[in-house]
Length: 510
Image 1 (cartoon, rainbow, N blue to C red):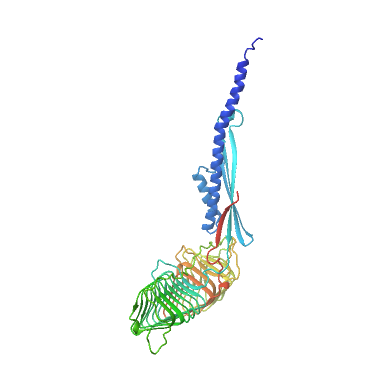
Image 2 (tube, one colour):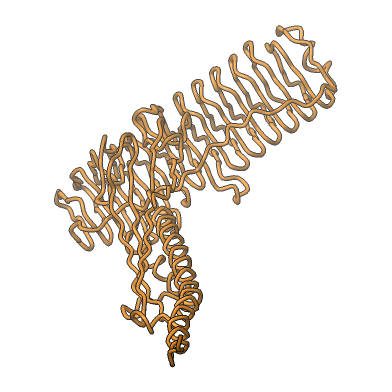
């Protein structure tokens, strides 16, 4: 048989092409897989970033999108439209069962420049990866700060809750909370009618003052001190003190209640401590003969000393992070300044709102977003039924000189982003220097939740507001100068926040 010239060359060429194909597959295929993995990871990460930003920035679509694109850029995808394209879209809110849901969709489209593979196919391979995250918000059940009528939330202040100068706080059925110390002094009084008085530090009652829980508990993570002919009534409720109980020239009435101290119990100066069914101290009793063996009073319990410490009940409320009210799409009215004539204003955006003397201001139902102050002066009357007020950018709310305000929260009200504000009367931005101040003999009535976690709230000078089925939560709360503030608490008519915190979950769909 004769050999055919060139046969080996042809066979080698065929084999070389196959070898190059395998090399291309190995090199370029690895590059494609690496890019696919990187772009998928980036798509997943920016989807999660957008979802978290959505929750943390008041459900702002623009902020969430910008945060996601910024992260994509730092990951090597600059969205130049030539080498890569990054997209972020957010849909919602929609209602799914009992939840409010947003969908965050992201995609990363990129090109991979080939090496050997371009001998057989195009010199670039394009591929797209996508991700979707579902933001699920369950409002839960129950009111915000369930059970509390008045709350002072700023633990950085030594005494965020103060009542002095002959002022009275009546919180019918609602508890009272201080994130640090609570001072009651100068002939003042507090009544909770079954509500708990709870402090994260000391409770000091001085100068002929009185507290009465009418069956509610007094819980202090510090000391409980009564001095100067003050009186404490629990009337069946219990006292729990993580520190000392100090009774100096004052009176503790239990009325079938129980008293526990993880410190010492000191009762001196002719004080009375009686009508308790159980008294227990982890420390010592200070001169017990001066108080529990009082002939003119009935002493029911024999105090137990040097007992093991007990676990003090914790009633610390959860402080929620609420969405920022969406004020977009509403009319912009600039500054409103009322004169001696009666006025009617519409919901919308305002730089400030002020009302002068002798006239009536009517605020029609809806959302009022105010970036400056709201000031009511000089005997004016303001009617704001079904009104939700959002104060931000340092805006302050102030009532002076006998001005009267009737303000009721809306039963149901949704902003343009789908946030529900039913039961919320006033919300002061926690990140700006805002405040609520009532001075000078004002008589007003309110209902709903007044939420000002970063603001100081004060009443002074003979103010006599009636907060019917209302709730007040501020950084600090101060009552002084003969002020009488009356609350009645109804959890069904305050802002509903799922026991204080919306339940938010992020779920990858793909």
